[in-house]
Figure 1 (cartoon, rainbow, N blue to C red):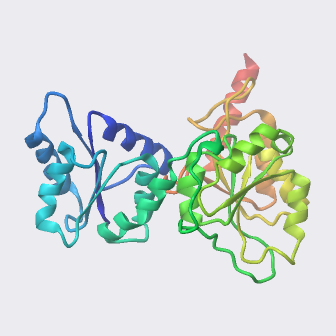
Figure 2: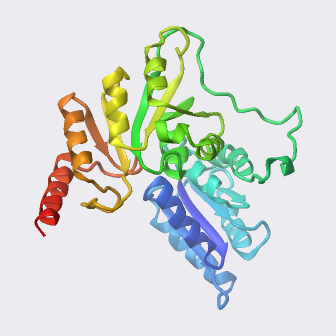
Figure 3: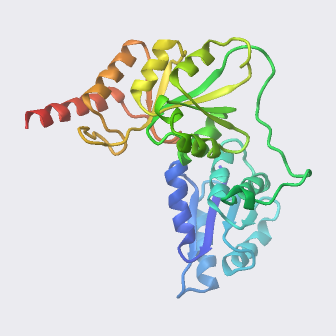
Amino acid sequence: MVGIILASHGGFAEGIFQSGSMIFGEQENVKAVTLMPNEGPDDVRRKMEEAVSSFDNQDEVLFLIDLWGGTPFNQANNLLEKHKDTWAIVAGMNLPMVIEAYASRLSMESAQEIATHIIETAKDGVKIKPEELQPQKTSESVVVKSNVGGRPGKFEYVLARIDSRLLHGQVATAWSKTVNPTRIIVVSDNVARDELRTKMITQAAPNGVKAHVVPIAQMIKLAKDDQHFGGQKALLLFETPQDALKAIEGGVPLETLNIGSMAHSAGKVQPNKVLAFNQDDIDTYKKLEEKGIKFDVRKVPSDGKENMDGILRKAQEMLNEKNRK
C-alpha cells in the first residue's frame, strides 16, 4: 500500500488527517507532519524521515502538502531526489484530495499514479455559492461521465443504508468510492415534501453521480420498472428503519441494509455512539429480520462490522430499565 504523508505549516495537516479519518475511516500508513512556529527545516525533515520509516512499503510514498515552495514542500522535495522514479508530491492539499488519495489506494499501487489521479478531484472540490459566481467551464473542460450501460433491466442495488443524516460526507466519499453508484436515491416521504432539503441533497452528490429524492411509493414503482434502468447502479438512503420496511414490503428487492446512524431524540436510548432506538425502532428491525434482511452495521467501509442482534438486545434492556423508573 502507498504510504501518505500529510504535511503543513502549523496544525493543518493534523486537522485534515482527523477529518479524513472521520469521513473515510482510520487509515494505515498515513502520517501527519507539521511545522510548528518554534521549529525549522531540519525538524520537518526528521519528522518526514520518521514517517517514511514507519510505512510498510517505503518504495511508494506520496506527499500531500499545503503550499508549493514552503518549508514542508522544500524538505519533501529534498527527500524526493533519491526516489524520483516512485515517490510523488502534490501541493495545495484539501480534504477532497486527501479522501480521493485514500480511495485510490484501494485500486492503485503507485504513488505517482495516485498523484496524477487526484488532481481533478482536488480542483472540483473548490466551489462557490451562489452558483452564478462559479466560473463557467470551457468546452475543453473534463466531463466526468457516469458509469451507465444501455441495456434494459432493473436497478443494480449496490448499497441500501439507513442513516438519519442521509447524504453526507461519509456517503458521498467513502461509500460512493467503494460501491461506485451511478445514482444516489434518498427514499423519504418527509424529505420529498421539503424543497430546501431536496435541493441540498441533489447538490451534495459526488462528481459523476446523480442524486434524487423520491417518496417511498415512487421508489416502489421504480423498482418494478423493468424497461429503463439496466446499467444503473443505485445507492438507496433511508432516514428511518420504518421507511426501509415500507419500501421492502412494497417490493423494493433488498437483501441487506447498511446501518450507519440513527439520531438521538426524546424517548430514545443510545446503546452505542451512533445508533439510538425507541420501541418502534426495535420492533421495526425485528420485522426486517423476519423478512430475511441482513444487517451490516458500520459507518464507513473500513470499519469492522458490529453485531446488530447484540445492539438491539442492549437497546431493549435500556428501554426496559428506563420504563421501570
